[in-house]
Image (cartoon, rainbow, N blue to C red):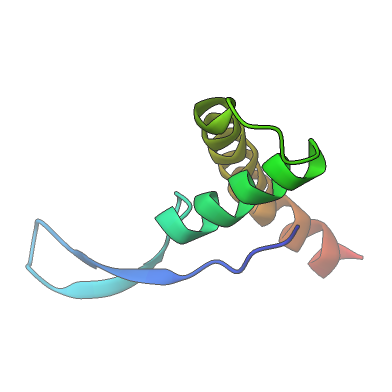
Length: 77
């Protein structure tokens, strides 16, 4: 599942300017969707909502961390 990366504004502590920087963490809605997909893949059995959420969060963070490496390999190819 490839989810898009958004940019967020960030204040520069040295001059107070704002610039766009890549977002490093998944949004709540992205985690929610990924957790629901895990739930469906398990056949919709109840009782694992927290585990699904935490697994989805880990998976998405890992995916976001790997994204720059994928982009740099694609540019070099």
